[in-house]
Image (tube, rainbow, N blue to C red; front, side, top):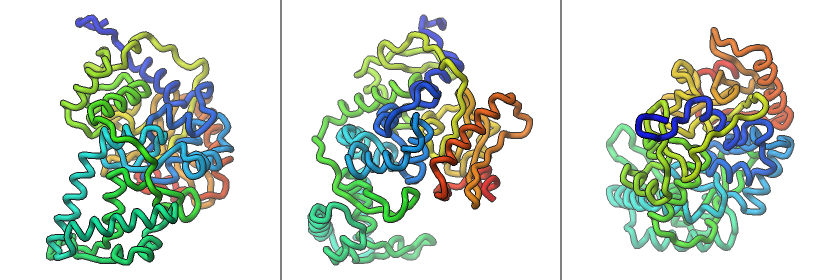
Length: 395
């Protein structure tokens, strides 16, 4: 207990919780992509390959990764890939569509539509009424097709091909197409989602699809539900962690914490929070564990304050300049190095100079590299956001 009577949850226990709740320890691995997404709340979906890699790292049978993830995303519709927290693309259970949209999407959506209309007006492009007509026509065409690329929709609604000059006279001046900008806004508004890619599961080119039907929820209630789910998976977490992950204002975070009856605990970083009834001790996995997690993995990116699982000295080699994490090597709840795939398909990994984790740990990491290689096969993986160590290892 700390001086305020709150239970202290130290680094060791936080790593135990991470291993079990993030589905990383061997005995905690999941049976399906739906279980993985449900446990983690959301997987970063900006890089399509990262979704499959994050699932594969957590499946008991990694050989099923591609087929089962494709099924859940594009056949059963159990998972959806759409804009969410911090205006970022995520993959999460379809049942959370309404929660994510109401809790994080509406405010961003209003801002993005206003920005598009402002840019179009400054360029002398058609007005809001015209854009509304085009939007209705494009959504009707998408409903008829089921899934479609922007080019296919533009054949059905030629006005999507209209172009306008953005930031005329500025160093970043560019020509924008209405289809690109409008579909992006519709994605943030929860009207369209990312569909099946045009190529393999690593392709960044994709089709659009109508968003799943969902009710309009009260924003405060949706925020409480989203925070409850995330804190169940990632707690304890600080207020700064919660603000960073959600993108909310501090008043919204505090209101949601109160709504779910979150309990305060003591952390090395200060005050943290867990869901009600989650203050008790959590024992660690029965066996030590290793994992190779992809770029943008939700575990590596899950908290803003990361010293309890990521040594500050590793950050320059594992993150890009925008704060995106690259592929990471884990041992018993902490990041110990990074990995990459070479042009010939070999999975290679490296620990920083001077790091000695022991022979058993290195053998376990090697086993995970072989496990990853076994299901990736001949597919070549290049993270969308390249990091220094990944570039070096893959060369």
